Amino acid sequence: MDLQTLWFILIAVLFLGYFVLEGFDFGVGMLLPFLGRGKDREERARRRDAAVQTIGPVWDGNEVWLITAGGALFAAFPEWYATMFSGFYLPLLLILLALIVRGVALEWRTKVDTPRWRIYSDIGIGIGSWVPALLWGVAFANLVRGVPVDAARQIPSGLDGLVQLLTPFGLLGGLAFLAIFALHAVTFLGLKTAGPLRDDAHRLGRIIAAPVILIVGGFALWLQLAHGRPLTWIAVTVVLACLLAAVILLVRGRDGLAFSATFVAILGLGSLIFGAMFPYLMPTTLADGVSLDIWNSSSSDYTLTIMSWAALFLVPVVLVAQGWTYWSFRQRVRA
Image (tube, rainbow, N blue to C red; front, side, top):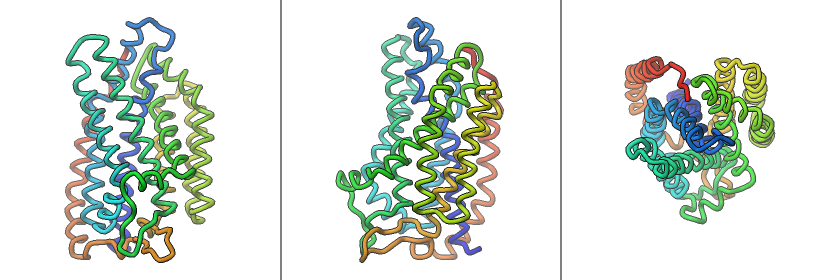
């Protein structure tokens, strides 16, 4: 295995780590308005407070995976970084602004103890959860499908560039990310909460189960049939099997196993995306354009070698630190 392939795999792992961990954070934010439906204002507020408590200690640590993935992408594949961050400027800016709004809302939600303030904060958490989840799905769907990279290794940016990404395939990718993150959050809340909030999570899980399977399964099959390869059928099978297993386990109250199933389903969907991309990073849709791949976009072997040794020592430290955080806050939250 050459260094370019190794770093493609490592960057894929970093993004998969981000999606499986930040996925339930996004999902909890998306589900906040639907918790405690039909109850009085105080009961709804208690349940939403408890839901936010489940992600409060870990959400910022989960975003470290995104920062690390972006840094690794910049160092290992600078041509990919330059083309993507300029051409995808507007969607990435919207993601960044939404994440800022979400972070501020989470940190300042308890600073003013009034119902109106918490409603505004919950709106910020919702916007900061729906927008990034949708746009990440749109972006990665287009990385698989291809974008108009010209001979100068540039793609249209601004509003025109954003509109070009909103193809049926791209939008379905965005909906698939929203759907699978919502189900992931349902299983997470079932695992991390007790009492009425856990019942709420199970109720929402039964409601969204069929649409999630249809949307995610439809996207996975479209991606496989249009852009996949024989080996990626394994990932498609894993995604569909784990989603079905998660729903069955959720109905039976096996929250830990249900969460594990959605965890693996997201890993499977991410593996399908990166497996379909390889060895391309940004395939072009132009006849006279240039497709970016892991060889024509990478840093020198010397740079990649130094990065590999650094990752060998630093990544285990990050894993241990984050594992300790999850272990320290493993107790269930009760509304």
